[in-house]
Image (cartoon, rainbow, N blue to C red; front, side, top):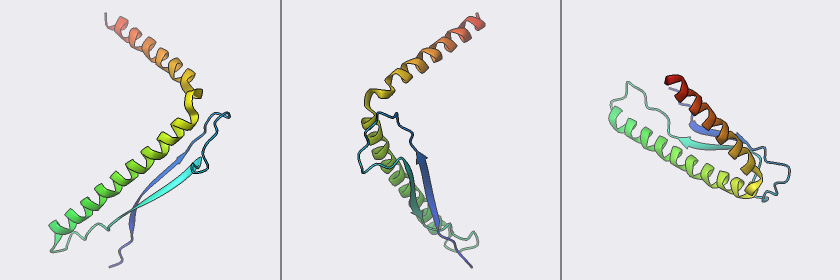
Length: 107
């Protein structure tokens, strides 16, 4: 049986405002790969134990990916600083207007 290695792959591309001065440690386009042990054969006698190991590996890879992306995206947020604040307020105001329209339609 030929078992291919499995991995969790996360890719993102950041397009910061032109005024952003990013640290050299940050890359605008990034791919991360987090290994996962292979899914066991369903015909295996050690099904339960193998499945537990697989899901443990999967959870660990997801947690590692979440931590890594959280650190990098927080660093990008800090690098961008206040340059994006105006956009957030505009979007929030538009979302509030939509909520009011839905409430009026229900009445």
